Image 1 (cartoon, helix red, strand yellow):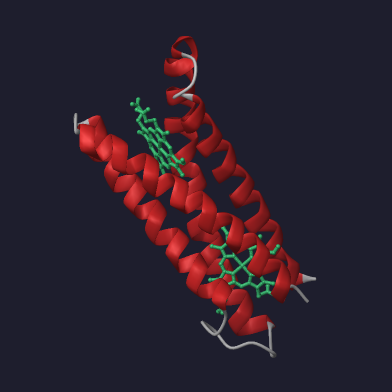
Image 2: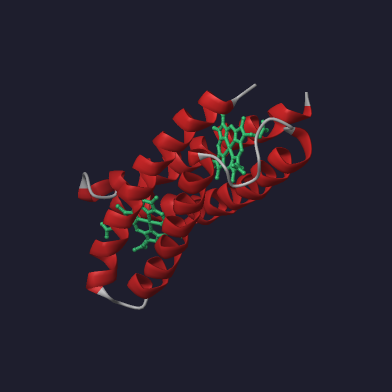
Length: 132
Ligand code: HEM
Ligand code: HEM
């Protein structure tokens, strides 16, 4: 039963991340909604990143202690999960720069975020493939 804790946590973390991304992209739609969507995105995105980090740690622990059939850091899911954590770390750094006024950081942040969402989709897919 414990082996399912990580996948459930992972699904929740990815849902939160997608919601945060949706708000961010939505801010680029109707100007009328921009301030509200940016505020929602800025409030949720750091929590989504924290949830993904926690899930990464839980996945490693779960693999090491509960799964006799896979070794730690053996799977594609590990590589993608680590890439996702790195991309979100860069999202956080670029968001700090954009709030200090960098226009470049604002553009780069969006593209890093889009890459993170694509990796997140692959993360769910590879996770399902190794679910017992
Ligand atoms: C935030 C998203 C996620 C991250 C960062 C993440 C990260 C990880 C990491 C680092 C591992 C260790 C892999 C290894 O050592 O080779 C792992 C294991 C695993 N992950 Fe994920 N994962 C995520 C989402 C998911 C999802 C959505 C599922 C399934 C639907 C899933 C299913 C699994 C399974 C089955 C394992 C093996 C451990 C176990 O059976 O509990 N993961 N994950
Ligand atoms: C660690 C994760 C993230 C953090 C901390 C974060 C934070 C922020 C912050 C503080 C802003 C600026 C808000 C403002 O100007 O008031 C922003 C804007 C934005 N973010 Fe993120 N974000 C993260 C991840 C993502 C992801 C995954 C996406 C996915 C596409 C994304 C897309 C956007 C977009 C489209 C904007 C609006 C840019 C603009 O039109 O000016 N962010 N983010």
